[in-house]
Image (cartoon, rainbow, N blue to C red; front, side, top):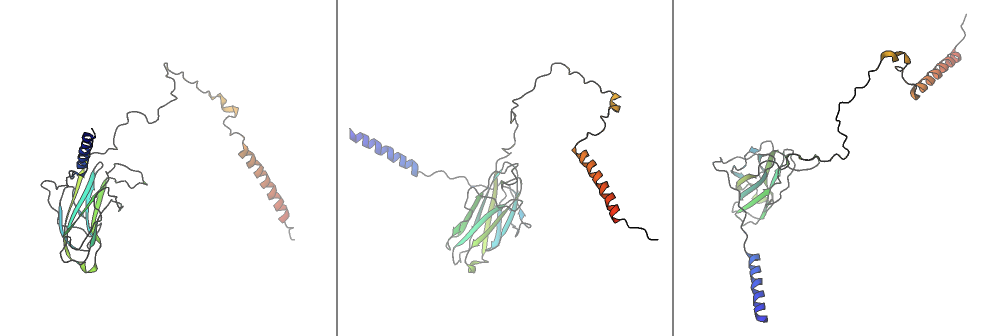
Length: 259
């Protein structure tokens, strides 16, 4: 009786192990838009960044140590993914570390939710792949938050660590910015009040009675005069004390006339 049970348990364990080690389907890499014109330029600062569109491929030749800048527009509801591949020269003396960074219009560095943002390759590697998946662009955000908002975003590609003899060597860069999603999830219609009214008033069934008109006979009643409050009392007392002080001062400083 134990032999069939042991065989069944072994078969189930083998099936579970096969499911665990089975390769998962890889996520499809972003592809350029059909008919998009490749960009063969790159800026050297935020002010000279080359404008590109989502799905437009970039192919440029540069030198190791250059800072390459591109800019692209982003609307609410989109989620952008930046992928880059740098073809490295063969004659290199050591390992190098590359990085791809994304900034918003206020030059605030945006966080990446996925992708190899700062990979390090050995001297024998022929290329290095970089990636950065941004958060979804929101239609509004609090002033203290750093959430991505609609506007212009900047991509900067550079090398952060490498041996000094490798500076200035030629490299080929391929970059692509893809966008997914349309429309903002923050937009919507409010179907119910946020705070329900728990003290609602009564519904008026008839027309309210008109208030009686005020007569003009109260002009001589003294209602138009200001009420006697503490401010009036202190003002009167202060004026009297000032007058007495003035008289006393004049009497003390008066001098007899000379003949």
